[in-house]
Amino acid sequence: MDNTPPVASDVSMNGGSTKERSARRWIIGGSIAGAVVLVAVIAAVAVTANSGGSVHAASTPSSSAPDGDRVQVPDLVGMTVADARAELEAIGLTLSVPAGTDDQAIIATQTLSEGREVIVGTEVFAAVDDTAAAEAGSLGFDDGAALEPLTMVGWQFSLGGDDASWTLSPDATDGEVIFVNKDGTCTAQYWQQTFDTAATDDLAASDEFLAAMSGATADEMAEYAFDGHFALSGGVEGPDDAGDVATRTLLWSDDEGAFLLTGRVFHKLDYATSTMSNAYLLQMQCDTAVDPLTVVDSLDQVAKVTVGS
Image (tube, rainbow, N blue to C red; front, top):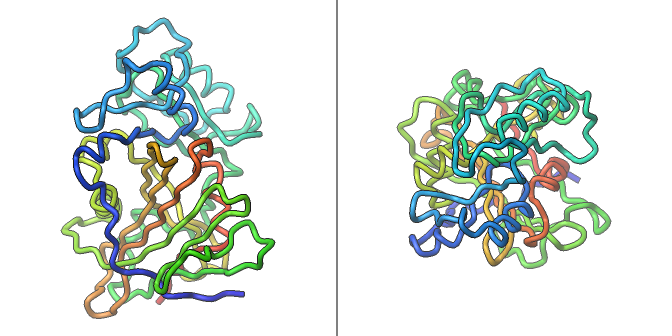
């Protein structure tokens, strides 16, 4: 059944002190497990977030470029997975796609944009046509500029039975919406709030919000933030399951587990008049061995953003 429990509106989850942030291992849209292995095996590359550097999720570069060299990410969109992998490996980068992706599938999105300078060995995460966001009815960052100031926005939750992939956590208190997956390896908490921003577009506002909620520095945001999505339900003149709402995402791991934080701000909403929240956030925590990117899409079945007049 569809139901919408109260959602906490007073979010306080930023990164805390510099000492606390320095324990994080930031990850560029790739494998959590790969990042943990990298920390253990190539300790010389591990630089704390406090010092301005970060650990990258990486595999051993296939090119002969020296460690520490920086290369530009090529445009992969439109390539086959096989061609994209070969092009990246030629310059010392690696490609990560969802498990089971065919080598002849066409890449639709990539987490690191064309021209971005990254350290050799960095993993570039990509989605192909059959796993990328649906176009019909989707709400990209640019589409936020077309929303009316009093547009109604909110969460829609589908609370499944005990046999569902995600169920409400028994540990959730009043005002909290926390889901736990079936095998108990991940929890997902949803938030909404008002966020005052001077940004003039949804992308910049969302990055500002994500930085405030995570405690990430501007340099960390520039290096590690990448595009994600929430499921979109109705609104935007579309039916249920119409598409996706673009979000900005961060990944990191520490001694407590692997984390994903993804959020979206609708900068044009007049939240003071409408009393609607303009900022929406998902925080996922998984066991260290679980990559949140491998399970985050399954949350589309239990949580959607609805946008309508």
